[in-house]
Amino acid sequence: MDAKITKQRLGRLLSYDWVKIVALAVAAIVLWSLVFTTTATRITPAQQFTVFNYYSNAPLGDGFYNVYNKTFSENKFSYEIIEENVNDLTTGGEEYAGTLLEARLGTDEGDVMFIPHVNDPSTKVDATEEGGEPTYTTYMQGFFNNWYYYIADVDEYLADMRAYVSAYYTDGNDVADDNYIDGTMNKEKVRADFLARIERNKDKRFKKSEQIEAGVLKEYERFEKYAAALVQFDKYLADGTVTLTHLQAAGADGTVYREGNYAVNLCPENGKTEKLKEQFYYEEEVDGKPKKTAKNMHVMFFDMKGVENGFQYESLIYVNEVIAAALTDAASANE
Image 1 (cartoon, rainbow, N blue to C red):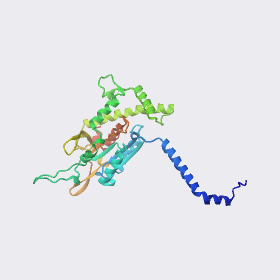
Image 2: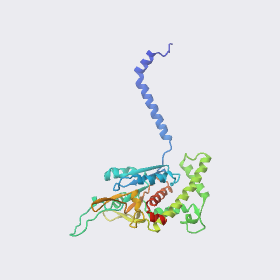
Image 3: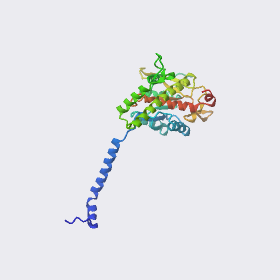
Image 4: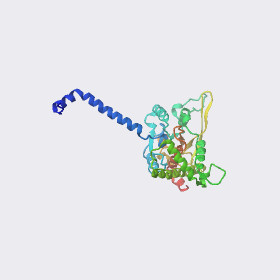
């Protein structure tokens, strides 16, 4: 049998079977892509830190990215954060913001929202009585009314964080929620829980013994960072650098769905954090001219069910970095 490959035979093959060849090539590519996708390590909600900037604010600029990128590049976060993300809702207005929020929050993507507690002009309701003042809903209240089930109560968030961190410290005290302040880390418990977690999650980052040991050290550091973040934030609260803001979400019939301190005012009327406008700001009209301001700019913590318990506290680390960068020179000198 003559099986010699000639130009003529090759030409006939390509003429009659080129469709099959292309189909086989495409099938091979699709199969390889499928294998790669299904075997690749996926980023979990806990490993991605996402900042939202509300549509009422000005677009994010260098001031924001300098602080945010520095927090990531200088390892202020724990080792668990391996990807940073930003959703700047200013690019498409209110309608776009609602669509994007529904998509992102539905997949547990979101850690903090920066939003001002100032009147939304579109919500103006004229006074019903002569001489009365019109009423408004603030941007933050409007957001909370629609998305309250994704927002953490700040008091509960801090209490849970204190309890979580304190469980890994001991100071010989009966009070269990402040062990992290002057206690000693229970490294045996940290190690045991770390090993149990990476086994439960089948974490591919920690397969070899040297990877596991390095991971244990990073886990010690994670709890140290959380403890330090709590101490620092409590100082900011105690000296009035930041304050908590009470919100209520209620139905048309008056039924209260949520009520409590659901936001942190990062720029209250005390002048300590006026530089916050270098990171987040909106414009207010002063003498007929627009002026940059961050007055009553708030941060809200998202409560995502898909984030493994304990890792939601990365948010406090970042918020502390935002506050530190926003302090005026006089306030910084007193820290």
